[in-house]
Length: 414
Image (cartoon, rainbow, N blue to C red):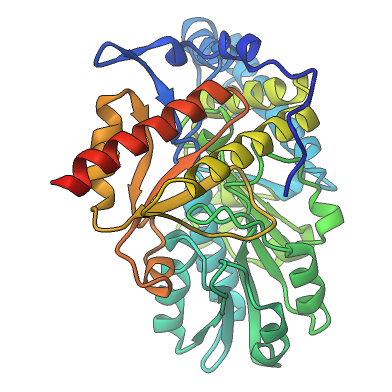
């Protein structure tokens, strides 16, 4: 199914970098298995936030004084880091946003305003997060466009054979998730991009659940847009990135007005700044961007291949243990998965299971995970989701399985 546990990766040494992992919950050691919602933060990222406000706090790109120049340099350096992190051609293609949702909305508002019209079509998949559904619905309502959906099978795998029949001369954009947050399915986005490009259709990839777990090369993928959030890859909340091919970004109108996005303003006319500043109005999340740079530094320092293999070993063990528990059913059984396992317990509300696990110190996510159409597809109200990061241990997987057994004994009896 996946590679076995690497011999030279020790999560115990990694865990010391993450202060919250030593917390007690109701007097029990925290078992944090909600990494798909947000990852924990290493000390270096926490220190970067503190250092900025303690030693470098100033607004950027406006001041001639020392602190402003220092903060501006630190901020601008991160754009270069992001460029290299995802292998973009140019830092002009990196737009700082508040996160994945903001990035998708930016594309919907700007690309959509320019290129989507009455009767045009946008294609998404059946496993999208709400943030990759609602912006397109709003755009379709405004423009009189049509939203189409790539279906998926009972394993939570997209039906790629259906894509050619869903593409036409009216299709103006494909927007698809790389890794499903609720099923763990890793979609063959490179293949989807190639199919769309046969019709000269641009493709946006939602990489929010990907960047912390595997290396991303946007030039190799050949995607036209790629979006992700800092908080899911060890950075702070409220910051993220939009990558866009320069040819598209140059054609797209500004999203918000004010601040860095202008060159000159008069009451008669405003001229706009060049890329990437055209899309970065107002004072940005300076501290967040700087800390995002430290998150990238952290990821670059670890053995990412070994970390990924460890996560797959955690997934294998959790999957095997859950399959042995009577009345527990895994939702999302693709052969190509990220370190996410979602499941239901027959006859028991998912929230009740999550609340019981919490009393044991085990943090999981319950509900529809902002993917209600996925739940409708499987005819369930929601799931219990355990999502793993390289700092999780095999002992924590054992505790999860033991907790589920206890929950089953208590909640099914009641």
